[in-house]
Length: 214
Image (cartoon, rainbow, N blue to C red; front, side, top):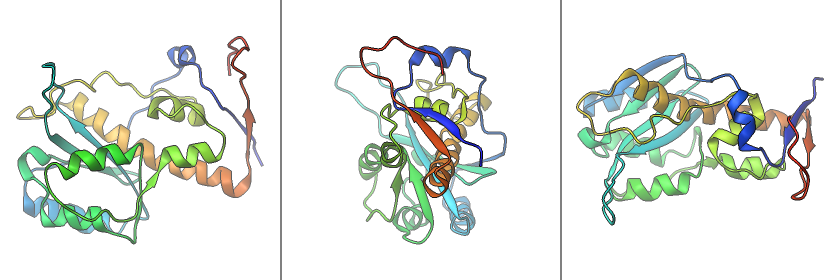
């Protein structure tokens, strides 16, 4: 059994030298209720789904836009639900309320609060990657650091502050959004493998130690 080394604390400087990771599967943009129905019917047949949301940034103090995109990814396909066009359709609510399919997100509580501003639903069963990461000793909780710690690859955040309410999302936005949701699926599978097989070694970095490369 191959042991993988992970760190309780992952130095941000280490990210600079890592190769880039991005979703390379199929991306489907959902723009209306009919498309949402079809997407949800498919997604609820999948074993694991990764979730994330995007909101148009506001550069005016005290003003916040409503969540405009919810991305939901299986292993090889990601659906981008453009909520600024669709709202929370009955199908999307059905997906959010589902208790059968394994659904994972990162700091998902914050996303749920944003979604509740555009519609009401009773949240189904979700697993937070941050909770799983803590269980194996990881202390840095950002998606970028957890993913790098597990896979030795970097997820770009360059599109994070782009306009998620644009009439048409560009390819860079689509790939960025899909990557964040897909990364949740990969992280979930890897952490569950660690927990089941014990196939990892945790390196503890004390606060007063100098930074060492992983």
